[in-house]
Structures are given as structure tokens and as C-alpha cells.
Length: 152
Image 1 (cartoon, rainbow, N blue to C red):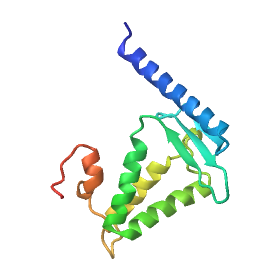
Image 2: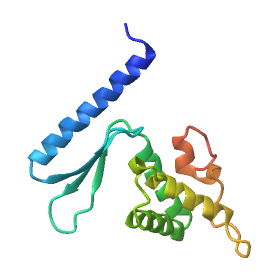
Image 3: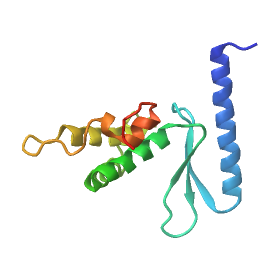
Image 4: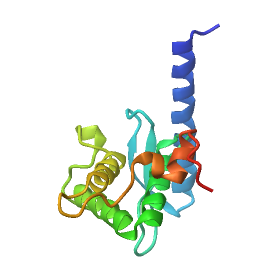
């Protein structure tokens, strides 16, 4: 019988093994190229690059809620104000282009850059005021966190 700590370690090892197996099969198919892995992160992931022109890197993770929350926040920002979603994506790209968006190097994650952008838009400028409401006004992301918002 394992302790809770060993169970967590076993689940993490299983997560890494599954990622390796999926990555190997996808790369062997010839449709993807391996770009990098982040197995030491809180939520292990692998970044793959589809073959072909104009390919965009994709992250592959197992049993990870962060990408779901990140996508929900971006969608919700776009629903509340399209400028908010555009700014969040722009800030993430800006941080990546400047090499300050890599957790393994001690930088903030893309998710953290998204949250910082949303915070800026919630606080607003003195002259204009906030563009986005508090998180409790985000219907989709609030429901992901298990909190009812009263929105339809």
C-alpha cells in the first residue's frame, strides 16, 4: 500500500509515460516534429510542431486543467470585449518573442501573462476606467472553478 505522496508520484510518472508514448507515435507518423518537453514543470507537457508550411506549435499534456482555464479566459475576454482577447494574445506573443515566457528559465508562463493582462484590463486607466469586470463576472471561467455566477 502506497502513501498519498507515492500515489501522487505514481500518477505523475504515468502522466509522463503517457506523454512520451503519444509523442513517440505522433513523431513516428511523420506528421509532427518534436520541439521540446517540460517534464519538470508542475503540469508536464510536450511541444510538437506539425509538419507543413505555416505550422503553429502545439502543447500536448495529460490531465491538465490549466490549458482549459486559459482557453476559457481567452474566450470569455473575447465575449466581453474583443479588444481584451486581442491584447492578451498580443502580450503573450510579445513575451515569447522577447524570451521572457519560459517557466523552465524562471520566467512567467503564458497563462500568467494572460492573467496579468486581464488584471490590467480590470483595473483600467485613471481616465478610462476598467474594460473588464472582476473574475466573478466571467461566466465561463467562474463555472470552471465551480462557482455559480447567475449568468445563463
